[in-house]
Length: 214
Image (tube, rainbow, N blue to C red; front, side, top):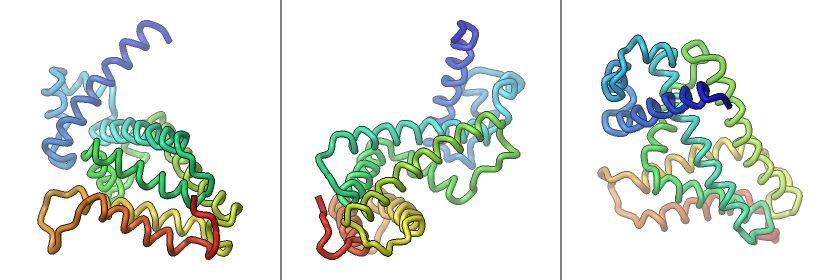
């Protein structure tokens, strides 16, 4: 990478980090390009020279977070002695919980994109391509684990893998949000036990009777 490219990436990372802080403090919807420009001491014109708009900055921050999270989950999976697909699903869920505890703003950003989606027309083609590539890698990584479980007999042979993955992801994010939320709840639970209870209930539903769990 040339010196000019390195300097450009350094400036982009500086803006993304400042935006991440603002998103955490004010919320994405309440953060404007003017706020970000002020935080990094750039003019709005300069900021628009690097980014198509706030949506692009937000998407790039989201991509950074997804990449860091997936790296942490891959490390957890590589370090486990679990041999079955079912066991690796538990590791996958627990590693997402561990990452979310360390990075509480990660979940809030994910919920934002669950609700709003990503509009390719509001971000650069390069940013959208990066997101697609990473999101596909994440999905394929989890899909491989589920298929491994079906093949090794730890998961039900009739399992609809894609349906189960979708429901697992959306349900787990909601569970983690409840476990880590400091807000009011009609009942109080230990966060670790709350998450483990969900993982046990979910994996019990997809487990093949008599199949390997480890």
